[in-house]
Image (cartoon, rainbow, N blue to C red; front, side, top):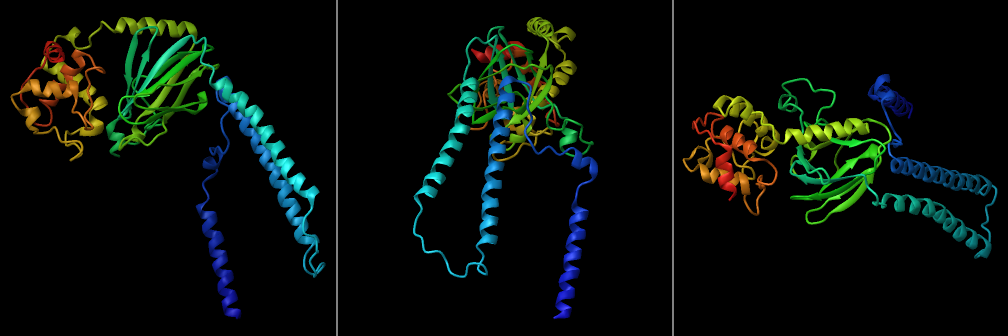
Length: 379
């Protein structure tokens, strides 16, 4: 008996030591955030206040229930009351435990309804942005300004495969953020081009599913300039964790300047300015391929068979039928994971990608595809 007790004590001591060793360091504890963030929009602040109201109500309920339970266990323990009371029911108690929960539900429902009503007020928007989820990136279109662009993960592949140290914003950085003006009501129209995604930025208090064939509305009025990050919150495929969201809130003047700059960029060509040469096109194509194609076909063109076939030494890529290659890139493959890039990228971008695919990874066809070739394929 003494030996067993000693073993039990030793085992308990070892458990305590292990628990202490498993505790995170002090800096890690300081970074813990157990509560929601108030956010930077009126709606997110209302959500936070509602959350705290419910938390305190639940805390009060817990204190009352467990306090009464403790009192009952102590006051009516067997040593004090060996014989149970003989009553069958108590109408007053039944009325109380029915009325109080009903009042609690009303106390929660009234402010919750006000927050939901405010969330669904999409009127009088200053800016309207259409958000389209794709496997696996986001497409943004400013409907009033006629600006459209794609936002891709910009974390270097070397960080993802572990050959380089991970950066501060690992898997949470993009090449082109969504830019919005502060203190202006921005209306978001969310949809999808393939499967169900979910556009979620916690500090904006916005989370909307992107469903193919449907448009879901939301809005935000950012009150503090800054950069706010989110991610897809719906499991949407193998690279679900590789489609982050970055929203940059700037002053109205900076936003207007950004709009003018984007409008001017429409007619600028980073390749045409250097001449449509093989070296310039391959450099541009490599960058575009990493953004739009590497998620499925890998940076080395090996793909992920059988769902995503390899492009290295592929009969379509190294064959003489360039038109077939262009057709697949433009229009995709129905009922497969290969989507159509015709509505997403312009002629120059697609020409650079096709040229790169036909000359990378040892394919070396020497084919230089031009924007005119892509335009001919669109017809």
